[in-house]
Image 1 (tube, rainbow, N blue to C red):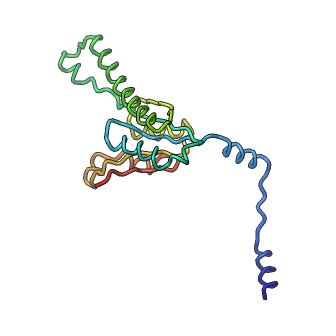
Image 2: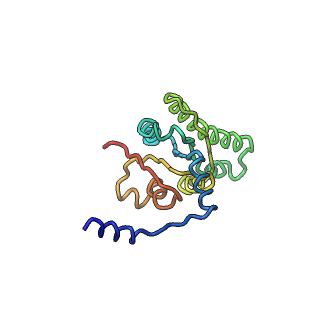
Image 3: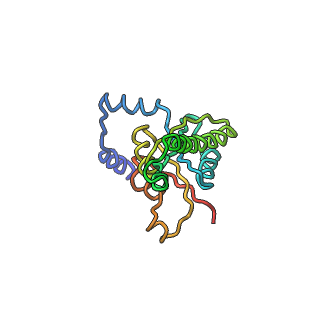
Length: 184
């Protein structure tokens, strides 16, 4: 009976042929450092997601590059133009734009400090645009293998009307997405 079973099992095995190009691609992917991107903003939940990643994925991150990513929503200058009857001083606009840029850089610096506590030196990336779309675009552009985002626990109604960055990323990012939820 055993010989018959082994004979049937061997006949049912299929041979998988991998050509040289596929072998080279697989070897390159193995030798390339994995890219793990953590999206950060000013919220506590994004800081928690970063800390969680550094703590619980520490061994996996040993041969990975960490990318801290932040997205700056476009600066709304409509109130400045309205309050100055359409003739806002250029110095004021330049100052507001510089402060807006610095706010994003400060968020990245906070993330770098959190990483330094774990002995990790991340890459920093900041993009301007709608955060949901900017995160997913960066995933593709940077060749990210894993995206980590925080979730602030919005209710169904809030998510329906305001949207959820984490939900958008789960449905649109071109890589696996890890959502770190805040504790209730």
